[in-house]
Length: 395
Image 1 (tube, rainbow, N blue to C red):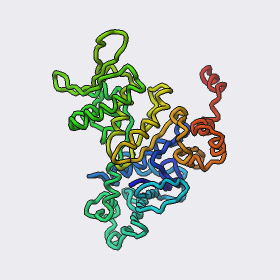
Image 2: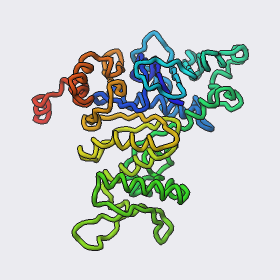
Image 3: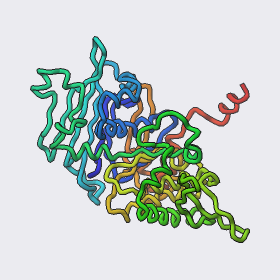
Image 4: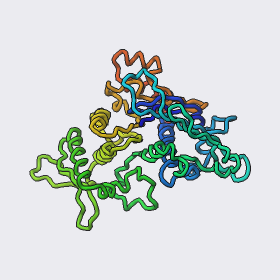
């Protein structure tokens, strides 16, 4: 199952989003345009649909209702989310596929009292047939029922549990190398799903040896393409049983000593985490923020092909949604305009467009430019010139 279309109304800094999605999507835009906020709608649905999840907690994790409702919404008080699914994508990019499933959720807030958020409507369609339409007669008799979605209730989502399971399997990735190297230095409760890698080594330890060794072998092979001196990547507990990654960096010294993750470069650690995440079999999307961090441009250019080659060898092909600031990441000419979303911040909220639908970009692509060459001159900040930057520094 794949997400084929996303519609949003009044979600964070987006007044209106209505875009088709592909197997791999790249999200680009200026700083503070809302790339993370766009990815966050999938995390929001994950937090509702996961085991023990709830609408209340998902909103509280984002401070409150007012923090997720678009400030430019004005008269429309509702937040609306619509996700369309297909079983698989057609090879014909120009063919509009009818969705197999459609999930819609609208959230409002009480005008008086505790100002609690509640379900304004929640619907599910399967092959054009409505199988859930809230508020139901029971909801109208007991308004307390509207403070929970049916998505989060196993007793209520029987007919569409496939969607709840799909949302539950969504994973967000933004590895921070320092957190992996020194997890004990970052005190406080763990963040659910550990997106920053605090428990990454524990995750490896809990993975079966056969699966772990198989994945590390594939990661080593991929790393040797971009880090030629690295070899013998392995998982080794120390004398206290604490798990570590270990590798050898071959150079002019014979019998070069092995290094643990504490000596790995930031880029190597981020690549290991990225490749591990990509190797996991998952039907739901993997959300990746700025995988180019700490990497040189030659390596960044190879990330799309790494993702593609890993994906085609897997039994389960989940989508990958990537936010990026890197023209090098989009230098691969196999990336088409249908796979790139452009974010354009305005006073009335950020607009989201598919790159292929913008004539200027389409003409540049027809002129044999890469999508990175065509897109980034458009999304780069137009007001921050070299002169204005120097004036700021000298002020």
